Image (cartoon, rainbow, N blue to C red; front, top):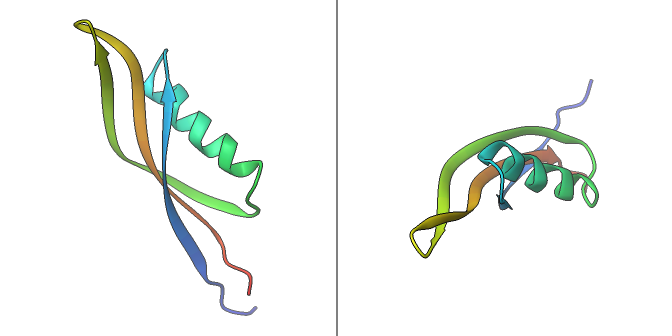
Length: 69
């Protein structure tokens, strides 16, 4: 078996409902454009606040996929 190389990118997903939905959105959107997704790691979670209330959940995700030259 040949050695493999993976590229890691950082994405930010958003959701009005939860951090889980925000992370899922980032991964699924990337999956529609990238092949061979391998691992997703949530590196940061935060919230957008408007008028003193939570307007959106945001999840920063490091996502790796197989690099093909």
